[in-house]
Image: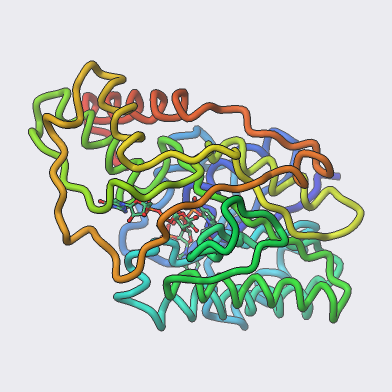
Length: 328
Ligand code: NAP
Ligand code: GDD
């Protein structure tokens, strides 16, 4: 019998990589799909990985509890991965309440749906290093206090503590992965890494001359999404649920990311990058740097992709896309 899993956010970056990973592990993969008027492109990431058609998709939305319960009753998953969210930090200042409803209360809806319809299922919550915000320790681990700096981070913090609360109150196998930034060729174009690699590819191909960015001094601990989804799965294979920081242990600035990306195609960022204050944020998270020691020790997990390799893979994918004019 195949193990059955349900992934929310299946059309996003992590949902696509996790689906591929779980299909390779022999799982029957189900995904929650919110209705869109652009149904022809919503599965672009699954197509990119060659797995569209291999996942059973169910209509649903994180804000609709009765629909979620119905999907749980139908699918009866052994493992549930809650990856769906309004995940773009900058938008969370424009849409704070929607972000709270989807990213925060949406996770509580998922916990309720599992508790009501399939309480034995193991549950993964996509928590975030953004919760550390105004960092209280130079290197962040599972014991570092949180200090959220955006409506998104505040919503994630609520979802995180609800996951801990359901674990402690109802003895659910609910784990929370505090993942630091992870990127890939499937990253949304609005996030800084993909914006940079797409911009570099456009400039290299003569389609653009400049790339406008915001705060070049912000630092992030960037890993590869393909490596990070494996950590999600490992958390649900443990006897006991727990919380884990997933990170590389290296931090780099947006400026350094740019230098690597432009350097990959033999260009200099100084010749092309302009700073545009439209891309600054009302409150910034200046630096994030994670300590993944617990994940290493208890899960046997370690990142496999260097920052240099990640940047190279992303730039190459964007060059390929632009040459073929593929959508994504
Ligand atoms: P993503 O690419 O933005 O994907 C978000 C997914 O959520 C999409 O499939 C989206 O569907 C879905 N979604 C949004 N609102 C929904 C709703 N109301 N109901 C149902 N589905 C909804 O995000 P990601 O980078 O894969 O990240 C996955 C999760 O990890 C997110 O929760 C994110 O906040 C969290 N996280 C990400 C990182 C990172 O660096 N990537 C780090 C820490 C935590 P559509 O395709 O229809 O838009
Ligand atoms: N998006 C964007 N666009 N960010 C820029 C730009 C720009 O033009 N210029 C500079 N930045 C800076 C931002 O100010 C921020 O400090 C940093 O680049 C990273 O921004 P994003 O790539 O948008 O990611 P994020 O760190 O805010 O959030 C991502 O990581 C979180 C984990 O720490 C998202 O994936 C979240 O969903 C995730 O939880």
